[in-house]
Image 1 (cartoon, helix red, strand yellow):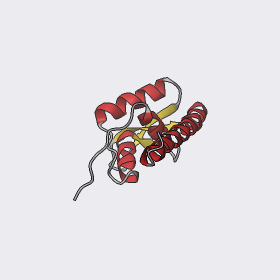
Image 2 (cartoon, rainbow, N blue to C red; image 1 turned 90 degrees about the vertical axis):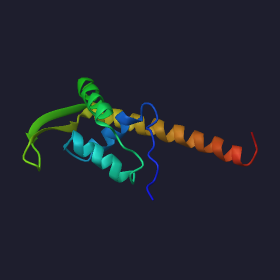
Image 3 (cartoon, helix red, strand yellow; image 1 turned 120 degrees about the horizontal axis):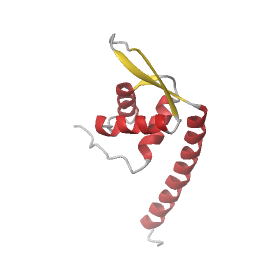
Image 4 (tube, rainbow, N blue to C red; image 1 turned 45 degrees about the vertical axis):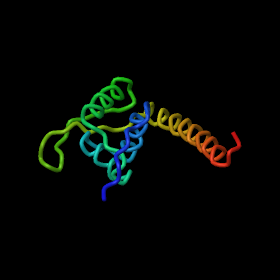
Length: 115
């Protein structure tokens, strides 16, 4: 039995990309694979969403990139986090934690009928 796939909430893809890239230089296809693997196949990032996000993050100065040979022997663009990207990731992670805690509180109160 396969688990259902989930769409990413608006605005979270950039944060997930920054988090994966924070672990070290990585190419686009591997970023998508890593997100899918870590999320236990719940999150799948399509190329049509991934590459525009990578270009956007690079244009904003949050990611740097170099062309290198991948493990398949083909040239690939490897992304790395910049200092600005690391600061942005810290901010987005804190915002996400605050938001998810608030949603959790609302869901808990709804379960108890306290709303």
